[in-house]
Length: 138
Ligand code: FES
Image (cartoon, rainbow, N blue to C red; front, side):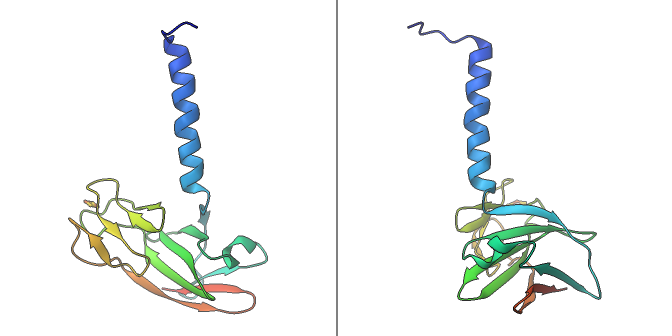
């Protein structure tokens, strides 16, 4: 077997590997463009049945800052700003925490900074759950 890889083969394999990582990281948190009505974002379970499952969530994008909406189990949901309190970078889901790619701050789903440099918690929003879905109150 040829031990040297062509640049094309390296790029192809690298892309496949990084694409796989991206899919894994994004598999539980899809982005959704939403409209704010009367100060609320409404997500229907009928349109997003996965949201009923613990650990699943959505990244809600609107005219305001993006918000993570996460099912934390037992019918409870957390809505947390996706904007880092350190220098306003966009936060990403990383396993069971929210992590800032800029300088490494890490937050839990309650918005608490569990690792700096960010010192302040993420902004959080009240959620209201019904049989039909979840509402985030802005
Ligand atoms: S902007 Fe998030 S850690 Fe610096």
